[in-house]
Amino acid sequence: SGEPIAGSFSNGCTLSGNSVYAAGDEKGLYAIDANTGQLKWQYVADAPITSNAVVSGNTVGFVTNKQNLVFVDSANGAPAGAPFTSPAVIHDDIAAFGDQVIYTTARGRMVSFDTSSARAKWDVDFRSLKPTGNFTIFNDRIYVNSSNFVICVRASSGSAIWQENLGRDLIGKPAASDSGIATLTANGELYLLNTNGRPMFGKPASVGVPAGSPSFVGNMVQVPTANGAINLIDPKSGT
Image 1 (cartoon, rainbow, N blue to C red):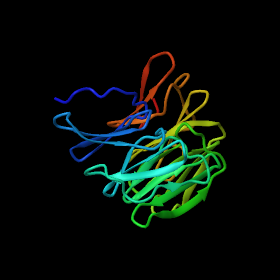
Image 2: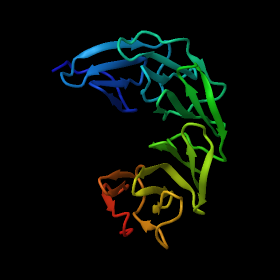
Image 3: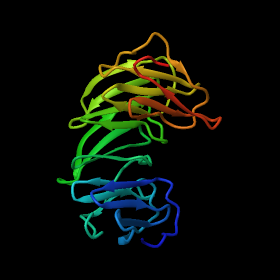
Image 4: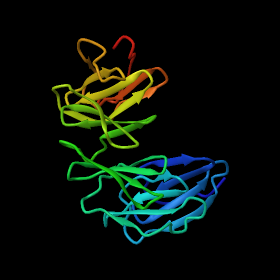
């Protein structure tokens, strides 16, 4: 097995093929062999890395505190084109969809950057986007928490498919699966929506003070709460 890598990796890691990519909370991006734990390569950015690392096409992308979207070759860590500088602060949580890198900004915009053309493919204005993570990609859809709304847009174009006003301040990011969409309110109510954006039950499930975003585990929705519990809710029954 490989030697431990000293550093803080609060933004997690990404598995792609037989490689794990992780951006440290300083300037280092690391590629590790998933089978052996051996370091494949290391890239040192010119500024601290503020986002998670994502794999888009044949590149690994991340954001620095200079608001630069930087790409390196996933095979060897060599720079892949010039960095793209955003005119607005990029939130820390980014995602990939094919050759696109999806990110949100402090100005309330969601942007798709096309790595093959090295320019923005689409740019959508939202009412409100929080910096702590606010969207999830599932299949070819992006589900976004924006103020009181859950909004579904096409990942390929950014065009709106539906939106649902839940009348409550939504936090974190929605979870999505073939079973539906799950989203949390600030006061600990879990709403379950079908894939057309309609609430599946008459009232939300109360889970307590949330400590993170919901996620699907098998056929269940998992919600961590501030009391240290992991709550499991069946989306078929809402209990």
